[in-house]
Image (tube, rainbow, N blue to C red; front, side, top):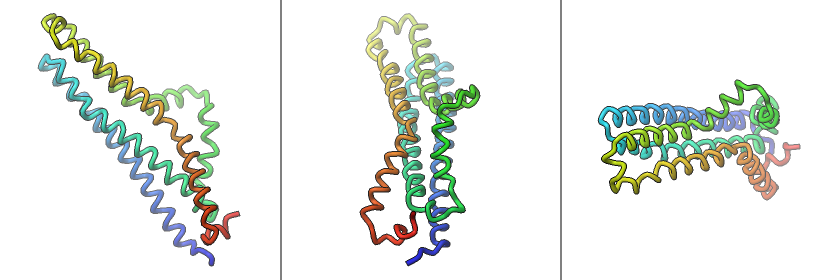
Length: 202
């Protein structure tokens, strides 16, 4: 049984819309987080209380992991399109072609591209380090705090910075994640020999 191309195009469009919604959510959450963190740090400096700056982590950490999740979810959908839809739709090959050019882009020596890529991946790292800098600057600027029991809290910003850095380095491996999803979708497809898509996929 041949598959109706209108149905395939409809499914393709729905998935593309969902991928774009993930991208939009990531951008919105990142913008919100940057704004919120700056506002919290400004309040800490205004009030002269370094511990207010640590409240930024209450927003920074959960949003950071949510943004990583959205990236993985988008890769899962993109891999599905490559395996199940684009072989049947020669008119739309965005994900297939994008997967082919990514290795070349990774090797690109264009400094503007490399800087913008690093900044995009490490936005939350920069924010986390910024929170730490403000906290330590304010803390050690107040002699009455330096020798108090508060020194037990000094390791918290560093530990959070490390968590953000490690999760960022793992989360940026989206192309590796996409490759894993591709293999999973391909295996699933092979297990369903009666899927009508199998007959049309060369």
